[in-house]
Image 1 (cartoon, one colour):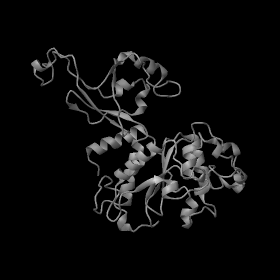
Image 2: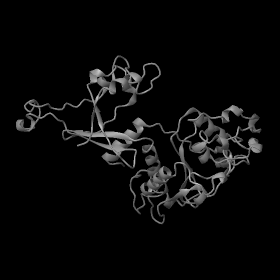
Image 3: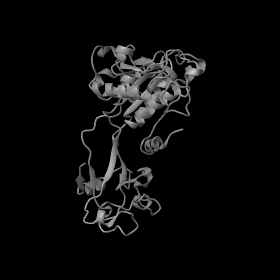
Length: 353
């Protein structure tokens, strides 16, 4: 199970992230216990760093096309591809054109890859994951998914329009991408040297936060930890821990309440914490009057997640009445709406003391 701090963390991830999982992208190969999909390797089926004269050699597989459709319909900032054959975390570059070259995001990739390795940790007989570029730690390929998902939108010279002949063909325009479609930190996780590891090395999914050499830990547990960290680092966030010594159980209000539903607003559905003002010591609080008199400050504690280096944090404070009824756009649900941001711009900025 998960102790309370982890449960609060998991509740935040569930409430503020959308995770999409493809259990077996190459379903046919998995069913047949083969690497290929009907003789074609999906791992080389993406339109990145392949020669233009070979444009018929990408998007040949259902696996490749399925992943392409997902990336065309979602904006993925973080991704993981789990494989077997060795134990390593690998990131860009993994293409021959960029052999012995760092990616523009090398520092961030190295930082995140290192964090994945430390948090996933090892288990009995297995050290923490090694990490580095695919070119250095694995091998380079043409048509690799990871490089395609990372750079397909901002490195168009490496991208080709696919013209496959399989399954009646595939529209060329589906391998034309906007400048925001393919910009994911999509890392390769080689999970195990044997592709079918021993059952005793799997560990237990019921205790994913146990990072010891005991039987609870193993391939499953450590990769659950790694995946959860990936979900966390999608974007930084501030979590309010407490007000005036009152520790919150959680600070998550589901996003559905950002707009008015059935006549009820976010404010009316949300949790409200009453903080005594100066002179309120005799009204339902045990704080002594002398501690509250002449006080014009409230102590708020918070923490920052989804990040490794924190330069500064601050709170923006204002009255609820100054905000619009709908924090999200009433038409398309975009949050926060322009109206909300205009209101927040007039609030007071408070920095830690």
